[in-house]
Length: 277
Image (cartoon, rainbow, N blue to C red):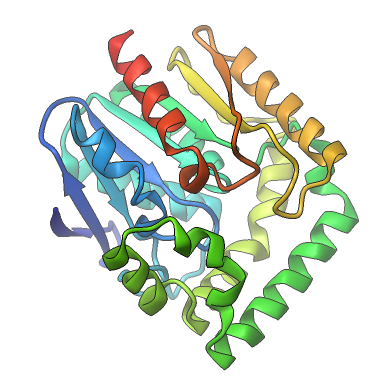
C-alpha cells in the first residue's frame, strides 16, 4: 500500500492510500464521520483488478481539518482535486452513506472522466424520512453523545462490531484515528449544512449525465433504521438507480447500513460488473 498527500485548490493536503495499478481507477468515498479505513475490507479485493484509492476527507483520518468548514460543495471540490492528481481516468467512484451525495456532485461537475458510480446504502433526497424532524433530532443527539464519548475515550465501544471484522493492523489504526474529538468536530461541521444542501436537490439534483449508476441497499433494518425507514431508504435507492440510463439496484443480504463491513464482497462484485460492462 502506498500513501500519498494530495493538494487541494486552497492549499490543504488530503491523505490517500493506493493499492493495485491496473486500470481503471476506483476511488472510495467514506460515510459521514468515517475515513479511508472504513474501506479496508473492500480496497484490497478491488486492488486485485484495478487501482484502488481510499482517502481521508479534511478533519478525518490523517487529513487536517478544513478551516473554512465542510459543505457538500467543498467536499465535492476536494474529491475532484484528488481525481485531478490521480490522472484523467477512467474512474469509478464508490460512495457509502453520506459519501453518496459527495460522489454524485463531483460526478456532475466532471462527468467526462467518470465511467461509473456505485452508491452504497446512500443517503438520498428521494427519501422523505431523512428530512423529518425526528431524523434531525436523532442526528443532533448522536453528535452530542458521540462528542462526549470521544472526550472520555470510549467512543470505540459503540463500534465494536465494525472493529471485530477488521484485520489487527486496521483495528489498531481505527482505535488511534477514528474515535477522537476531532472526528466528532468534523462530523458536526459536516452536519451543519448537509441536510439543507441535500434538501435543495429535491428540485434541482446534480445530473450525472449518462454515467452508469449502481445502488446497493442494505436488506435489513438496524443501525438506527426501523423496518419502515429501511423500506423508504430502499425505495429511494431504487428511484436513484432508475434515473440512470444504465441503472442497477442491488441488495446486500447480510447488511443493515454498514455494508462495507458486513457485505464487502457485494461491493466488489458490483465494481467488477461495472468494469466488465
